[in-house]
Image 1: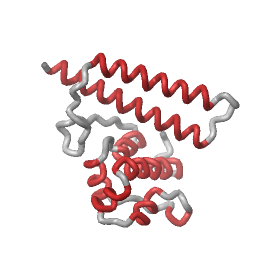
Image 2: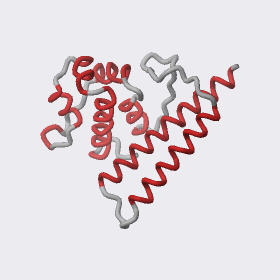
Image 3: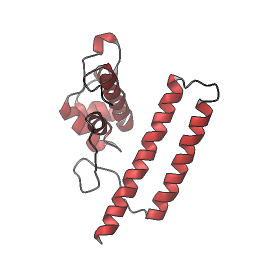
Image 4: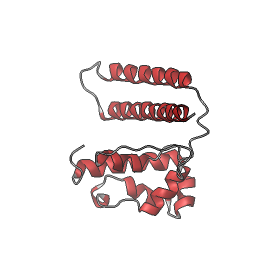
Amino acid sequence: MNDTSGETAKGYLKRHTERLIKDVGYAAACELTGRSKATLGRYFSEAEEHTDRFMPVDAVAALEAASSFPHVTAALAELNGGQMSYGSDKRNAMRGDNSGSVNANVIALSQRFAILMAEYHMSIEDGVISVNEARRLLEETLELQKVLVEMKLRLEADSRS
């Protein structure tokens, strides 16, 4: 993504903010940030009056500490051409004990890829990928990315032992 100062980047950040809030759940997000459901909704709203309104960093950190994936941090890294690595030794990562084997990761990777391809084939049947279809594809891509990160962490841990 090259348009880091433009509308594309703003929309991208807002969509990842929404994913973060939904990952944690509205009630927990309100409690963790001390903000109302309406205020949290404004942070990811793409309505014109909320275009320049973004979640403060302290609220993002609190939510990402409780989430299954650091959605906003990953989005910021991607927008800036960076790459993110995290694991159970990182402060904000609450991803479980990462006890799966590489074989389990390969199986999960194959399954997620198959789901992504099935979604893609269903999406292109009419020759046009709708907004909802694009969102489903993006969700599956993110799930695939999570499996790849888990696999990378497992391989890194195995290479140290």
